[in-house]
Image 1 (cartoon, one colour):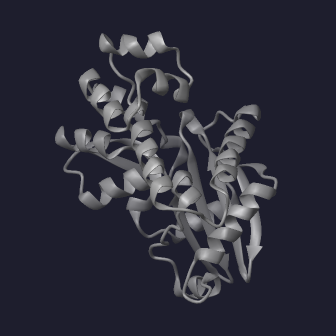
Image 2 (cartoon, rainbow, N blue to C red):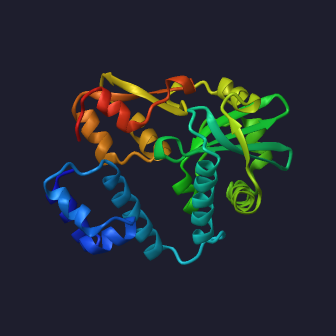
Length: 263
C-alpha cells in the first residue's frame, strides 16, 4: 500500500490521519512519517475491518449478543494469553463445554500478534475441526463446511446454527479459559478428522504457484489477511501454504521477509 492509497482509503472512510492515529493508539507524527517509509502490512487489514464494522453498524440494528461485550472478550483473551507469557508456537488457551450431546472445544492464541481461533466438535466417535475468524464471530454465525451429518444433527436448532453460536458466545464471555497447547488430545483428534488440507490451522511458507480463488477466500476469512495483501501475493505468482504442524508455523511477516517480498 502506497501513502497515496492510504490517504485515499482514509477519505473513503471519512477518517482524518488524526482520527486514525487515535483509533490505533499511535503518535500522529509516526503516521505522518509513513509518507517516506514503508506502510506496515497490518494497516490495510485494519482499514478493511473498520469498513466492515462501519457497514455493519449502518445496516444492522441489534444482534443477540452485545457486540461490544464480545470485542471486550476478544481483548481479554488476548491479554490473558500475553500475561501467561505463551510464546511457543504450540501454546494456546482452551475453552471446553457441552452443547446438547456434543463436546465443544475452542482453542485461542495470539501468536506473533495475530488472533487465531479453532473449533473442535466431538460426538460419540466423530470429530470435526475448523478454524474460525474471531472478528466474524462477533457479528456472524459462520457456516460450518464439511461437518459430519451426525454432529450437525446435534447442533442444529430448527435448521439453524444461531442458538449454537449464541451459546458459544455466552461461554466465551462468561467462562474461564485454561492454558493448553496444540498437542492436546482433542485438538489432535480434530485435526485427524480434517481431510481438507486447505483448512490447515497454521501459516507455513510461500510456494511459487497460482493461488486459487477458494484458497484466497479461505486465507482472508480464517486468517484475517486482507484481500488486498493476498491479491498482491498472488500477482507475484505465489500462494500461501498452510500446515497442521505447529513446529512449521510462521507469521505472515516472517513468511514474506523470507521470500524478500515487499507489498
